[in-house]
Image (cartoon, rainbow, N blue to C red; front, top):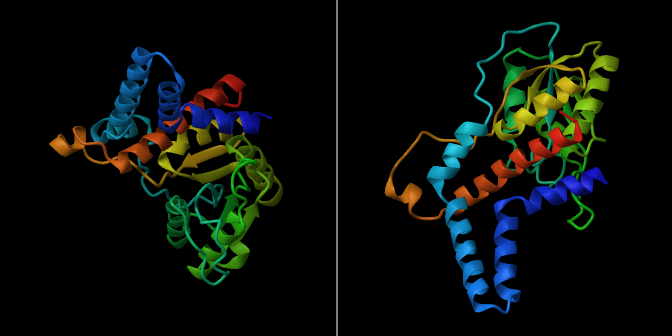
Length: 260
């Protein structure tokens, strides 16, 4: 129930949900004055959410800062990679040609840590996080991510899958169990996207796991005051605003629920 509630609330409290609510209000109201207000609100929300300058400032404020390459540590030799868009689970391209997703930088960062000798094992954590009304995945994201890492040179025996978790809290709980049972440690290098890292760190700490954050998938950029950055709405900025606000809302929901 919490899973469905959190995913639904995450959508309703994002720019797409706000824009839809404003347009529905304008469409169904019979009051011309309220209709104008609804349309005006929708335009304002679209401009604010698509404003590259504002969205970039939000990313710079919220995203977890970049980390330097950690030194190898025998007590922290496992990288835990959180799924959620790392591969395209809605198309089956076969094990020899895994299709990567928009969050595949998480896999790339884990691969980099492995190749540099910082970690010796990679634990991919995450099952299906789709809602019942959404499209069903046709491939397992963890399996596809593992196949990509193997094709990139990671030994199959160095990859572990935890594919039962459906949200960040379960990522932390289930990964913690694997770390303690299989690797006899409660320490790891945590790899996820920079917007998702704050909530992830808090969840893992709540689960008793000592994490060293190593974020990827940054959405921020150097500040720019070019006229196109703040005057013209941009579809990339709209997408970034959606992801950032969804993460902020998710953090607040988890805090209220006592998960962090």
